[in-house]
Length: 398
Image (cartoon, rainbow, N blue to C red):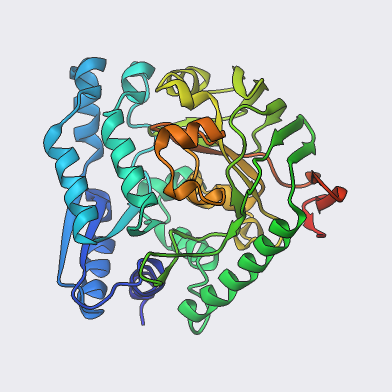
């Protein structure tokens, strides 16, 4: 089986785990057309009733940002909200192919306009994904992405790195991911048993303590939908994660990998948090994009995720900086500002959004991961049993 076919098979069978008669929505860029066709073929082969592609295009996006106002770019589109609701109600599975075809396409444009998007649509989509839809987000190799990673459009080299990260080099990638998912789930259960109340990340340039909520649950590997069907929302994934108390985060963090926000590359990012809010941002490149991003809504300045990844991560072992947060976040410990996960706290999934907010879970139209891990990072937790070391010098020791 060719690598692209193994990729598509993994996305369909382990990612969204398509069931016979199910509809599939495939969100993809025109740069990914060959991969999109392979995923479509695999979905139909697995019994999908239909596959609907939802296309984006980089140059068209630049035209929109160049000529439209912030208000126009942020305007609510009722038809789009209706479409998302219908996807949820009809029980579709959702695939998102990522991989910037030209990461510098929007360079030189207004950061406020680059960051602008219909917030209600993003919130509606997040609610759908968090309330029962099976979904997967996965990177799609292309020449532009390869150029960003290697300095040349060597797609074959990128496919090799992506294949290693996604375990496509193994005899049975689907079985390999089920095994890895089980390992990560066991780590989550061990963390649950500690009943941690706070987490501290420490390393060069990073000293951040984040509060955790009572009843916090850690998730690793895949998820299970309302019908009991397992799926992998991110491929690859090497993390165990949860959502923190949005009001309790103090300290500084040094981001150890580039961040891509709205197609813009941010390097050398440093962030200060006080009283649970991001109060300071500096960067070697792209600080204005981050600051504009943090103005998306009130929740954008609060944390929605804390995650643990160790040096055994396949992404870390490739030695490649992918310039794609789906991959790079799984190279090391990370946090995310923005939307939290309702399933992260016992009973929160059944609450209203206001009840979740009152509890301490964050609400936002954005969710942006930034890596703080790597060589030298240590993570400790505090709970009823005292302080415990979870990761020491990037090695899982719990």
